[in-house]
Amino acid sequence: MLAARALQEMGYTEVASMTGGFNRWRDAGFPVAKERQLTPDQLSRYSRHFMLTQVGEAGQRKLLDANMLLIGAGGLGSPAGYYLAAAGVGTLGVIDGDVVDLSNLQRQILHSTEAVGRSKVESARETLTRLNPDVQVIGYQERITRANIMALVKDFDVVVDGSDNFPTRYLVNDACFLAGKPIVHGSIFQFEGQATVFVPGQGPCYRCIFPSPPGPGLVPN
Ligand SMILES: [Zn+2]
Image (cartoon, rainbow, N blue to C red):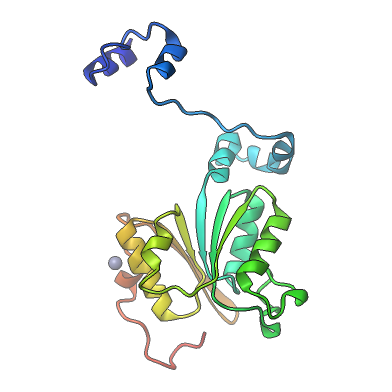
């Protein structure tokens, strides 16, 4: 009855009694949520996630419906992309303007020896969809610029910044701040690594912590 009262207060007097049940609700054009059905293969593939109370079947459905954008398919984007695809994040955007180089292969594990000379985005798409056919990979073979960044981030739930230079890092930070999108940052130097999550409105952004980039030549990439 509380639901009926709430609906009445919202102005839904016609259906507030809930007579006619679900069918009448749906036929009257009110919102309904249809739950994604997992296939037998998916039940098997993600069965270990179902044992984790923090994920479960409901969480897996959310992951399959999620969109994440990977900035860069290099040393940071490779392991992140692999694990996100394996976990069943349903849509992965990958942006990278480079081609695979032999000197990348010792760390950029998305790419194989046969992929040398080919676009990193294409190579990433092949590797990730071979790992998990549930994942749709949207490739952008281009560099991030002020002109394309806002349009890119707007369609994604979360952005993973695996870029290798400071101008891109600040650009991605500013765009995600303005668009209200969480960013997962990764950075490494030799044997050390850092991962940070910036959620707009829930703490500082990258620029709050590092107001200006280091001078040229101070930090190797
Ligand atoms: Zn800030």
